[in-house]
Every structure is written in structure tokens, then in C-alpha cells.
Length: 188
Image (cartoon, rainbow, N blue to C red; front, top):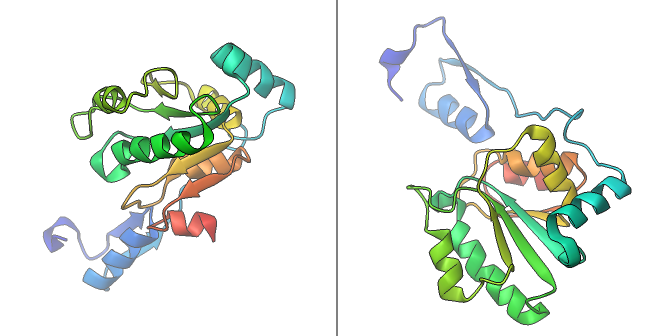
């Protein structure tokens, strides 16, 4: 924290409790306010069953009845994208490779992450067990993706808040998360 960056009358807006706690500890004389993330519930909400069924059919065809897990994060090392794929393969080995699918909405070759396509090849997950959605999509399309999922996953090793899981909860799709940072608030 560089004290030269602010004047005595400045206020810091913190979007995570962790950041707010750090500011309070490092510079208690600085006025700071915790302003939590929010989602637009006119976009991120549960959709009617018939819309979810149609979306699943359009996206997955005959495979629409699998259990779908959704992961929506940047492919950065702290987000644990490669670890998730390894764990998902172990899960598939237990439940069957045709019974579940992981949809990862991310850049598979992010320079700050792992080469997800290589990991899939090495693990032999090349038959639709893990699908990667690399293109930017609109918030309404993202809402449909949360709705089609049976569960959203975030296993980051450090997460200030976890906006994707809040969006998922707003769509009434359950989440599996690590108990770190802002994710703790969402599950407790």
C-alpha cells in the first residue's frame, strides 16, 4: 500500500471483505467502504424448465441427460483449472465417463494459466467429457449456461469474491466451492 497514492480526504471502495480488511489493517486512518458485488437479477434468474430443456437439447443433443458441471473463470493458475480437470477425471472414473460433463467457460490457452487442451489430451478426455466454451458471450447467454448446469464449481485457492458463483446462485443453481475469501460468505 503506497501512502503517496491518496490524499487525506480520499475514500477507497473495496469490492471484497479481504481487501477492506487489508486496507483497515495497513492504513486504518483511510476511509474505506466494503461495497459487495451484485448481479442483475433481471438477467441472472431461474429460467422455466422448458427453456432449460431446449437449451440443453440445442447444446448437447442426445447427451442432454448427463449431469453438467459448469466452471466460469479465467484460466489463471490460482483458479486451479488444471487441477479441476484432473479431479473431474477421477470423478468420471467412479461414475462413468458418459454420465457427467464439465463445461469450462474460459480461454484454454490463457498465458497466465495452463494449456487445458493439452491436459485433456494427456488425460484422455477427448470424447466430450470436458467441453470448453472460449468465446465471449452476453450476460443473458451466460445466465442460460448457469441454468443448464446442475452445479457450478469454483475451486480457486484465493478468491476475493467469486462473482460467477453469485451469478449461479442467482439462477438457483447450486455451487461447489473452496472455503476461501469471498466464497465463504456465499456458502455461509
